[in-house]
Length: 238
Image 1 (cartoon, helix red, strand yellow):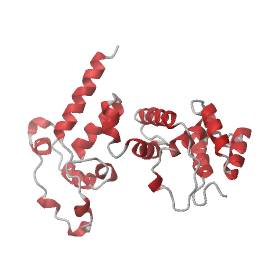
Image 2 (tube, rainbow, N blue to C red; image 1 turned 180 degrees about the vertical axis):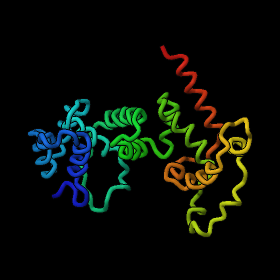
Image 3 (cartoon, one colour; image 1 turned 90 degrees about the vertical axis):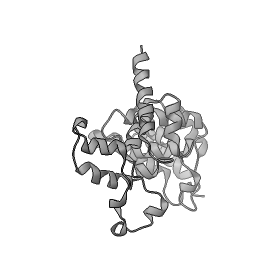
């Protein structure tokens, strides 16, 4: 039986390895003996080998470490999001997989564009549910607090399912109720941010996946709360 009939784990693994070794691909980094062996066992559907490989390499550097982490993250993905007819080996240590996901999420916050950013978000949502940012923020993960601050400020015009079903050209954006925080930012000379294009950006951002994935309505008060919590953590840090 094929390990995966639709989208092979190997393809995901090799994509991740390729992304992490672009500068040195000409030196044959991707085709290391470990990676070749991994390919063979993936094609055989050897879940035991994949678990052992991941246990050994999940915290290591290099192509093998990248492959192990991607395989671990795949175990956190929601079953409902997998292609139909797909039989998958799932990494046995979900706790280790979640720890890797959180560490990669923190690493992604330190860079402008992290290659695993989307994969990590999908994995965290699969493991912790739609409110995964809130869960991590309450656990003291600072990037989650920062994300919540940004989302609750920028998603004030978040659309619900009913609004998204209306074609863009039929939407009446000019009938949006005023938002005190942004009214101040856009109109009060003391805010220092009187740029009219912000108003248009709020409409566009409200339709983005980042905003639609936010649980509940965006509230500036929540942004202020998490901003204060993070500042307190910084002050208390040794």
